[in-house]
Image (tube, rainbow, N blue to C red; front, top):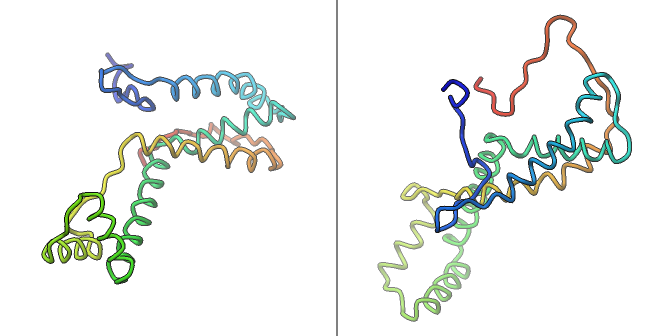
Length: 176
């Protein structure tokens, strides 16, 4: 059926071991969207929101920014780079590396062989031998960035504009 084409379900849900889905994020997003809907309609008609309406719309806009697949991907890539930087620094700095080895040995209850130490150091310094993937659960935590963006948007002076001809094309996940 055409309306199901290119539709992704449970995009903001986490699957539990029993196969059910935790829908709290989906429900929160639905509440934010329904609160913003009448404010959005007034904005379309040129009425700039004030006070609580402006805060509610700012929250909606902030969530729209951080919830896109592109934003989630950017956040995951940034964290991946930070992990690589930390790993590299640990691998090239003897004291940091020895501290890591000590923690591993304490956790496993055995000494690492010299070969294991060498392999560990090499993998910390050169990430080409492995692929780092952050799960969906981690990516969903990125939605909390909206909490920091909301007051920034609220403090801005808002204006409305209209297209001189036709209309503006919008999407929360452009294919361009």
